[in-house]
Length: 261
Image 1 (cartoon, rainbow, N blue to C red):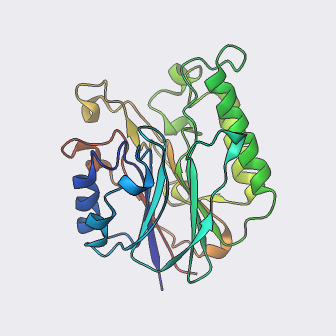
Image 2 (image 1 turned 60 degrees about the horizontal axis):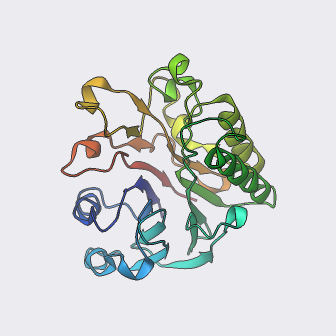
């Protein structure tokens, strides 16, 4: 049986519950992983999603910031939460499907504006978080999928201008190197780029742009990675760009991939 997974930074699950419902209705992924839910777990509008068939919910939350949630119409087991950097921030949750695949949902720290760990504690925190993720990956992560807003656009064609963004947080060489270490140490493949190997590909566009689509100054910050034993269905990955243009949108677009182990 195939399983379609979607990852989406929703930028407040309560404020944007309507478009979550629309996505679940129109696209019907089997599992939806949300980041930046900005809600305590008991305030997530779970009843609205359960009414659409997504009755299995695992989440971690903070009031007003961070937060991750996994909504599933398939039975899942809570596979636990990791707290990196000992901050207590709600940046990870995970579930295990009946087929044995574990899905890890991450919201990596953005890192502030200055790409200098000595001058910017937020950037130092981001690099430490990534280092902790890499160490966790080396523990062995068979039959696993990592999704989420990883807040780094690794490739030159994952940003609108490689040259202009080299010193901008999310595309600096030190971040790209750290993210690649996380991916390689855990044995995950970047399934989105496996499926779409060429050309510019974005999942985030700033709210600051008056016409985000025409300007198209995007970045690919949202990722789906998988170990080879998860049965990624070749050609299934896609970014649903048009969602960025829905009413009261998140600044991120949903990313999809399908697996058939």
